[in-house]
Image (cartoon, rainbow, N blue to C red; front, top):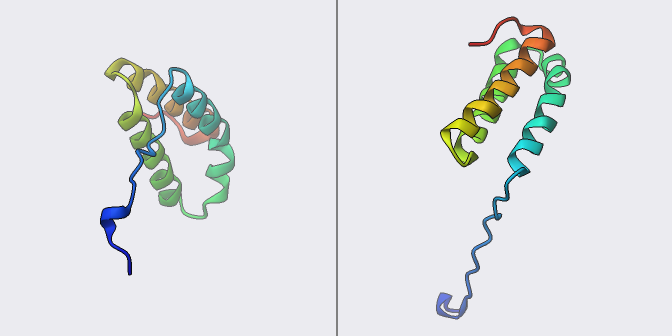
Length: 86
């Protein structure tokens, strides 16, 4: 086996550009009704939804951006027939 000393490591993290996260949230929101119907158990849907919300919160550039984008997801869940989301 070769030595790790000869390896070159490159930062492969995606560059966050303004608008990318907003576009992603719009796309996720468009999938909420389909995803709601796709899961047999309601808990499975909410696990998926919570994961998406957590991802948005982690990747938002500010608290305000996170709140605005999470509100968009909450509204999508509300429109999909899941009632008010706090």
